[in-house]
Image 1 (cartoon, rainbow, N blue to C red):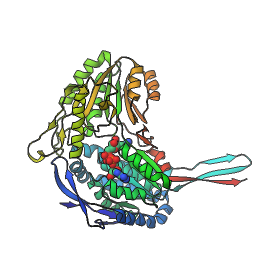
Image 2 (cartoon, rainbow, N blue to C red):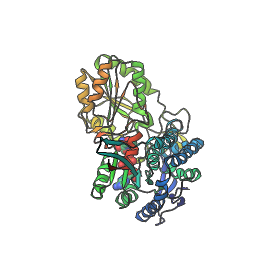
Image 3 (cartoon, rainbow, N blue to C red):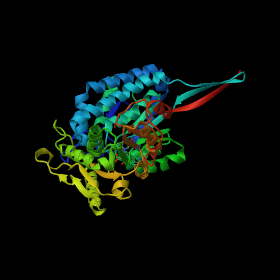
Image 4 (cartoon, rainbow, N blue to C red):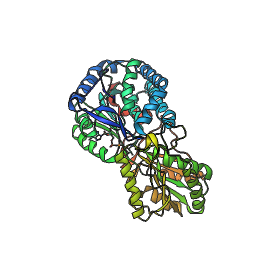
Length: 480
Ligand code: NAD
């Protein structure tokens, strides 16, 4: 068993209570590591270390902080294979995906914010002849970064990097399901020269370690990515203490395919957006709405490409679909497949758990699954499944597609496939989605605001929005 440890004040250590939790490899169903079952004393130690490191860290020029983050970025790139291997083993995602998406993006996060902090200018407001106002953005202080299991290092560093760049010190709480790369990050942070206490990683459950972190009175801001139910709970805990909150939550994203689109590209990208990371990306398009004149052709080509998605050992190069993250999640996804039948859905592809031979015999694999014949109001089209299950639905008018696209409690992302520029603009502005892609998907520019509307979240990450979140604006007014 690999013992994963907390990273506190620049050192690795177990939980104060000595307790551990098993970490399971989703591809085998076997435990392979343990993580500390941390509680309030561990969180308190981490927060105190961060508080002690804060005065010196916030005083450093942005350029110096940035240089350390750039060094950390280089170290992540230098350890690409080891980190990708760890991420794949921990999550069940194909190694090829971890190597090309997760880990390179973690390196980019540090490189991007390490540089951006130097371009973070403050504003001045001149009242002619009366006064000059200028705004100072102070680091918020000690902040919590809490992340989910689907893109472990990618999302954790998307929070840590801007927090550190802005001059905050961090206590990070990765998902208890996928702690491995966050554990390795401590070692790289030390090697990069981050001063002890600037970054601390506390492992454990949400209910114990996460809750203690959110409740801690010295935490000034919480950047959280995870489920909507958890986000609501964290908001309720944090509100009486008036903590600053950024909540990136669930989604049920629509893909709108119009008859005038480039069909080949729309099909290929929609297959990817439906099933990348086994459908376990918050931005995956799980409700695919297709204009009726091309519905049958889209369906035929879509299903042909779905058949080619090889489900297999995540460590094998040919694997396109790995395992779901946990046994509990496997059963949740299978229960939605059952529900789809009960709601009158007609199965077009998949629908079964996959039993692989050998090493992966106990793994949590599900075939990429496609249903049609389900109305926009049914639960399968309303609730977040967060797995490889999607629906195809024909539509007749733009207004109908828009109403269905907007007809859920969520509003994270949407994709629109059309060659009609006017329609692309018109629809984009009317879609309830924090991110709209036109003729593309998961095309990310780290400078852009990222976040959801409605039950998909509050606040925006990315670019200057993230630096604004991790700072507090102060206005200084000088009489002229
Ligand atoms: P989750 O809400 O169960 O857990 C997320 C994190 O919160 C974990 O680290 C967990 O330990 C912690 N946590 C749980 N209870 C807590 C509490 N009481 N106090 C503090 N922390 C607590 O989510 P998950 O199952 O890990 O992730 C899947 C969800 O994340 C999906 O809904 C998905 O859509 C969402 N997600 C959203 C985005 C986005 O950018 N909007 C990105 C990725 C995933």
